[in-house]
Amino acid sequence: RDKEMEKIPSRPFLIKGTGRILLVDDEENIVISGRQILMKMGYEVVGVTDSLEALEVFKKEPHAFDLVLTDVTMPKMTGIELSKEIIKIRQDIPIVLCTGFSEGLTSNMVENIGIVDTVMKPMIAGELAEVIRNALRTEDLVDS
Image (cartoon, rainbow, N blue to C red; front, side):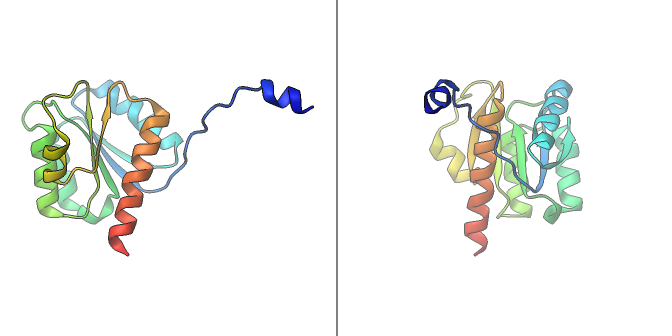
């Protein structure tokens, strides 16, 4: 029986979480699929395809969100600019940047802005789950 158990490949399970996430990406299909993935993980998700609109949504209820997940390259206002504006409103909000490539981002630059982590596109559910869990855990440590 133990030999049978050894044959079963170990698959990483999807980390479940709770909280409300503001998801921002100018590509609607990414917002839709990202929202579905995050909801399966247990999160409540507000998806927005316009960075200026996302800022307005955040301004209206800054304490309604536990985390912001934003694309870097967007028209009107980049994810970096959006992150800076959001942090001016609420310094303790964890922000995770999504990027298709490094886009000249250095870990120093990201940390100086106040961004807690980055995730590469295409987003892999398991990796995203871990990044979000760690970002929210960081917030818990700051609160206590």
